Image 1 (cartoon, one colour):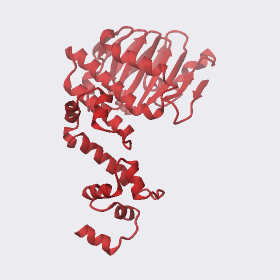
Image 2 (cartoon, rainbow, N blue to C red; image 1 turned 60 degrees about the vertical axis):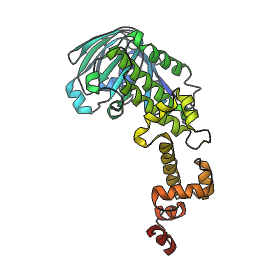
Image 3 (cartoon, rainbow, N blue to C red; image 1 turned 45 degrees about the vertical axis):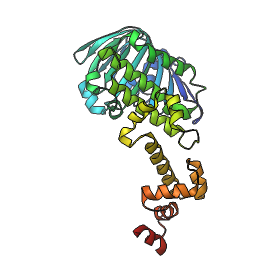
Image 4 (cartoon, one colour; image 1 turned 180 degrees about the vertical axis):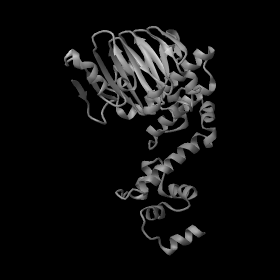
Length: 335
């Protein structure tokens, strides 16, 4: 069995699995037993030609995208299987080559080359897949329903090749550069994938991108961008707008529920400071922590930190690590 693993923390390309070096009679079982979450374990599968497959795993933050080439077979997932394994994600299958025909819990499926098929794993389905080259990934149900229509309503949705073009071509570019793209950019890249998925679904449903779907995906992308640059002096509203390709007013609307984008950034920075102060293995000076997380000096950090947590950074460090506070500290908290 050919399984190449790459060092953690380098590129988003996590590894490759292939059955090419196995005896033909062992290939299907090797694929099915490879992982509890592999498609071969989540479906009953019956190859209708000699089985072979190769898959590259690319990890983008919460998304694990499998770029696979596989021979033709029949896939079936019953209601009993769904109840037994409890997997209820939204599965996105982008078909670069090879069509599929089937029944998705009463919805007929006829997916040509270049299309995208959506599956609610909590519902039954069966389909016959040609030999194909695809990209597929799971989106946790709770995440999908933050920015898409209900997952149940998406079961069996086939997005036509013309509408699927942006996401399909973007995924191909990610795959081609996966051995060079740093793992630290995974969350940001996941945001772009989810953005394009939301737009494709909205276009398919109504001919134009629905504002709530796009806004939800854009918010995820903006949050990922903020997290990636949280301690950087270059993190500003102007730079965020430039990176995300949106106006200042559009960015503020995304973060209206957070009190605005500046308030969100400040809250996340203070939370990172608090996490550092609570780490018993960290012995950084308050001034160094302030600089690391984008505060101009320790005094400015101290004022904002006390407004947020009700105590100074030094007192928070002592309190969170279980050390007794001084009488003077307690008096300041009461005051």
